[in-house]
Image 1 (cartoon, rainbow, N blue to C red):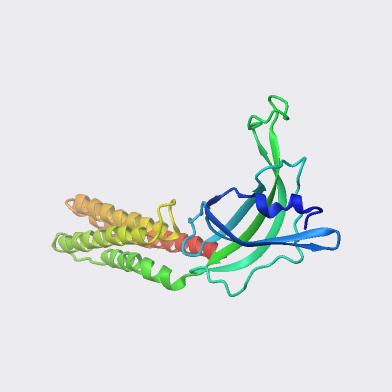
Image 2 (image 1 turned 90 degrees about the vertical axis):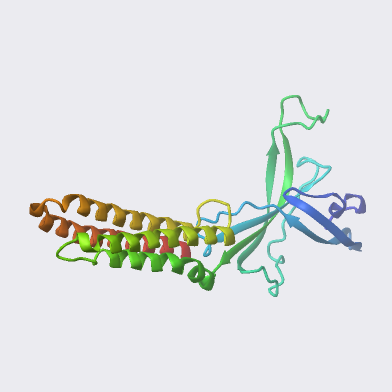
Length: 267
């Protein structure tokens, strides 16, 4: 609503974070002493996503609108929070809308844009109308599909700790073979998950793969240590205990770290 037809804000809409915008079906109707104007808008908008908890991530998507001509001293938006909403039939491709809101902020630009009406050295303030969509993704099937190879590799590495014989040299080849296969499968799975995920930082799935990779490398280190110490018969009982301690402690750390990471992501 505007007090005059000449002040119709829909003719000067500037979508600050838009890549492409199309406007259509503009109309202006006089209602009492004010003018009610409306326009249909469709477009593509830029938004930096935090995907550290992908595929259970939550995103705060904003559409920012300013007046393309008047600054805050000349024109100010007023948000109709009570009667603003969205079509609940909207499908956002894996996301669901958990909250919606509109508001107005005053945005400051550290320039006068060459406006002679602004004193040299002063900033420019514009009223900014903000549409705020809070989204969340809950893709359990996608998480299982991308993470299960890492967990299989973890189980294989865990089993390798219990491959033992009175003469350790007879089984060391099998143990290294299992750990090598585990490392290879983790690397391949991590690569595949990165291709289907995103390049924006380290995701939850990436964290699980990196933790599994570290767990397997510890297994390689432990096996190498046992092989090094096995030449001394007096050390054999000690390295057997070391093997058990390393197996149980690293497994516990791995499981706790996974539980914490997933817990933070889904809550």
